[in-house]
Image (tube, one colour):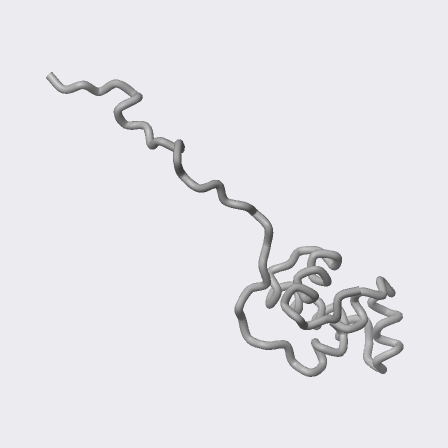
Length: 94
């Protein structure tokens, strides 16, 4: 007869390094020039429409650029994208 106690089959987490869930920017394709221009305005927390007005493009265009920026940086929110961009050297630290 074999010992099939649960403890025998459990994976031990003792002595395993703890992982942090702090995000780092993804190593993906670089930003396009248009995305880089939008990225420089994300820390201002202006609306997408206001960013579009400043850059001379429509809000839908800015929204598309922001979505691409988030995807490339691995972000889901504006503040996270700004932080990751600063960490990656794409924006100056405040």
